[in-house]
Amino acid sequence: MRPVYGMLLFVLFGLVTAVIIGFRPGLSKPLPEDHEQTGLRDRIVIKFSHVVAENTPKGLAAEHFASLVKQKTNDRVEIQVFPNGMLHSENTEAEALRRGEIQMIAPSFSNMSNIDPAWFVMDLPFAFPDQDAVDEALNGRVGAALFRTVEKQNMHGLAFWSNGFKQMGSNRHPLIEPEDFRNQTFRILPSKVLASQFSALGAATISTPFNEVYRHLQQGIVDGQENTISNIYTKRLYLVQKYMTISNHGYLGYAVIVNKPFWERMPEELRLAVQEAMAETTAWMRQETKAMHEHQLEQIRASGAIEIHELTGEQRRRWEEAMRPVYEQYRSVIGGGLVEEIERLRERRAS
Image 1 (cartoon, one colour):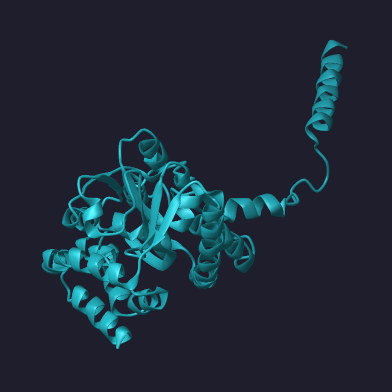
Image 2: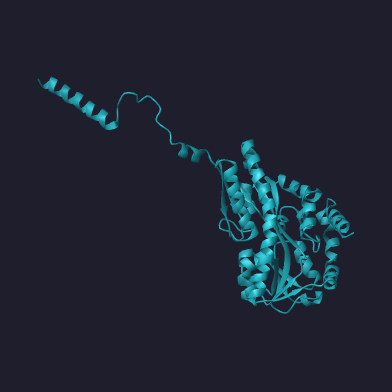
């Protein structure tokens, strides 16, 4: 009886085990899929790192772009935006992009000069009389030449974004005549052209990350800085500056750059959708930037925290004359006939 009893126990154990593990007819059929989770695995993620606040033109454009990409790709591509230097500063973002640690950045033109000196052309003082002149240059030969410089760096250029024209600020005294700059120290973006611009005015410069500008002004490490209205407003720089001059002497724009191997691996239909979203965002940003600067300048004036002066035509002419040597200093460094192209466009628009 013992063998029979043992056999019965074995069979009973097998049946109990089958029930516990879910053995039942039809188990060989595939189990239902969670399509939402499958979609998450297939989704392409693009980490977009930048260094300014969310409520600046670039910050708003990045979020707008992310929303459009989600719609146009049916959520197959996700743009994860990291503002305010959360992931990388101006000094580290380009190398992180090359390594593939992040997939997209939007550095200023000045920062792009660290990659190739051709980008210095966008820092030349008084190079553009208005936004239309900037658009003509970047949509033409100048823009094409600049984007060619990044291809050999494992990068691919997608668009040029606008933050408008820069204004001058100081804590010493109003900046009205060129000699008013003498013996002051200004914070600048990392660009030799910008350093030479201030040197031509008798001023010294230091280059620091954007997120440190407020503290350096507050502590007197620098006397002044140059920036767009939106950056001055959103970073509250007008609260630590006594004087501002509406000079429109230089242009601040961004190159939206993607990691080239990553971009080339993306399915063509998704690349086209992302490019379409980028084109729409670029046009949207241009309109938003103009309206934002007008409103924020009114807010700065209304605060009463800073004295504001606007250059007259004659004062502007004297500033241009004082900074003119920078063109000859960098003509051969920039190369490619780009300085000549900028001059030709400016003269044609002035005639």
